[in-house]
Image 1 (cartoon, rainbow, N blue to C red):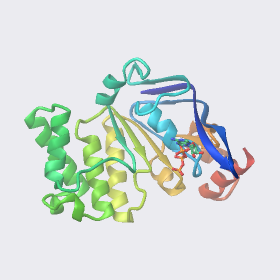
Image 2 (image 1 turned 90 degrees about the vertical axis):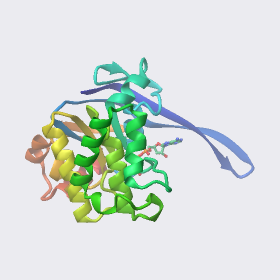
Image 3 (image 1 turned 90 degrees about the horizontal axis):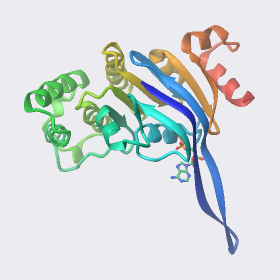
Length: 251
Ligand SMILES: Nc1ncnc2c1ncn2[C@@H]1O[C@H](COP(=O)(O)OP(=O)(O)OP(=O)(O)O)[C@@H](O)[C@H]1O
C-alpha cells in the first residue's frame, strides 16, 4: 500500500539573466494525494516535466518531500527510509548496472546486498531470467548488451528481493514491442501476487494494457484520480490518447 497526503516538493535553481543570476523556485510536485492498493496497478500519467519521476523518487525514499506525508507499506518514509528500501523495488532510467559484470554476476551481487539466502536468490533469479528471456545472454557482459537487454537486467535487479511495493518509472521506455510485452507480463503477474504496483508513463496504450487506477499529473498537480474503468466511462473524446491530451490542456 502507498498513501500520499498533500505531498509537495520544491526545487530552487539558479538561473542566469545576462550578467545577473537569480533564484527560481519550482513546485515539481504540488499537494499530491493518492492511494495505491495491493493487488492493483496504479498508473501515474503525465506529459514531460509533469512531476512523475519526482513523485516516484519520494515514494522510493531517494528524495525527501518539502511537505506532506508518504506512507509506504505501513512505514512513514520520513521515519524509516532504510526500512522502506527493503520493501520496495524501484526501476528508473538510471538504475545502475556494472559494465564488467554479466547478468548472473549482477543479480548475485544485488541478491547478496539484500542478504537473500542462497536458495531464495537462485530460485528468484531463475524465475526472473526465464520470465524476461535473460537466459540466452546471462553470460554476456553488461557493457556489450543492447538497451533492451540492459533494461531486462535492471528489472531483474529491481525484483530480486521480491519486494511488496513495485515502482516503475517508464518501464518500457525505448523498448521494442516484444521486449515491452515480457515486462508488461511480469507487471501483471506481480499484481496477481498481490503486490502494490505504481508505474509512470506518458503512453496511453501502455496504461490501457495494465492500469486499474489512474492519476493524471500536470505541472505538479493531480488533475484526475479515479479508477481506469471510470475514466473510460466518462471519456468524451473518441480515443484514450485524445482524452488524455484534452484533459491536460483543459486543466
Ligand atoms: N533535481 C532537480 N532540480 C531542479 N529541478 C528539478 C529537479 N528534478 C526535477 N526538476 C523539475 O521538476 C519538474 C518535474 O520533473 P520530473 O522529472 O518529476 O517530471 P516527469 O513528469 O518525470 O517528466 P518526464 O516525462 O520528462 O520524465 C520539472 O520542471 C523539472 O525540471
